[in-house]
Length: 397
Image (cartoon, rainbow, N blue to C red):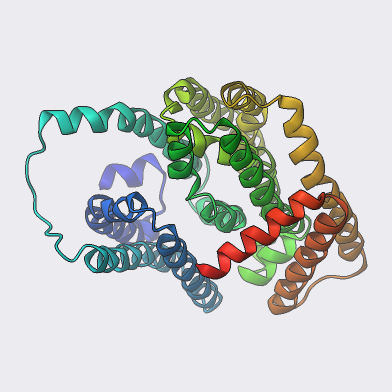
């Protein structure tokens, strides 16, 4: 572990903490990575309500404990411990659900047959490459920061990344059912059903994300000051730049799940490799001039540049004119967001939040106002019936 201290220029007084973080991450990974298969078992049984509930409750508890302990003065080791314990508890709960759903199931290690490996590898190789690319995109920022900047900058960046990740977390949970549903529709040759899934999934997950993202961008300084302390406030641009990425990312999330369900994801491997390489190159170049903001732009710029090509491929495969994505999704979702942005800017000009609970209440009010505008002014009768159908399905979860 000593070479890590040298590579990342870790101060001597932080060597012990660094060793603890590495050991914690490695130890938990030995459990979390192999036993994550139980999540896929539940997804394979199409019990998405189980994984959604577990993810929601674990994420909520994780957020609560993170806020409480960090405000009490605990540091990086505590943050790593909370993240790993949350992931481990999630796996344990899912294992319990698998045992309940499949009482005759017996866990044992055995050598898989050649045909099994062949069948799995057709899709899993593509997913492996994409997941590795996504991992590099999301996780190498801290490595680059450690190499080019003082080690304490990792904490400042991690705080902003946490807000960015949380902003998109809940909408993404709603997409879990798209992949198997699209696979079933493809088998039944229901092309129109695939189109409907794409529009519903993209429109409403983007709509859930939009007011939260806009409000987080405008009040980024208040979020960091009230959550982490005034010393984090100068790094609010990290939140703003990273969240900008979500306005592009959510345009293809539902489409990506459809392509996985149709086993057509391999065509997008070049896209993910380009994003990964661009992220690394741009981050390494900009970190020298813009520090943490350069790292954040290294993550965001590639998604902005290549988003059109991703959407073009999706629209071509499921036979949707790309102009419909603009008229039926982008215009309907982002136009009411401009109203929310204007009101947020006015509020930010008039006063400064002094309590995190009041700020959370303001977030809720902004989301409610956006929902009313979106529903009343930008949805037709058929689309409003879709909303009612989605709400009814959520009540059953």
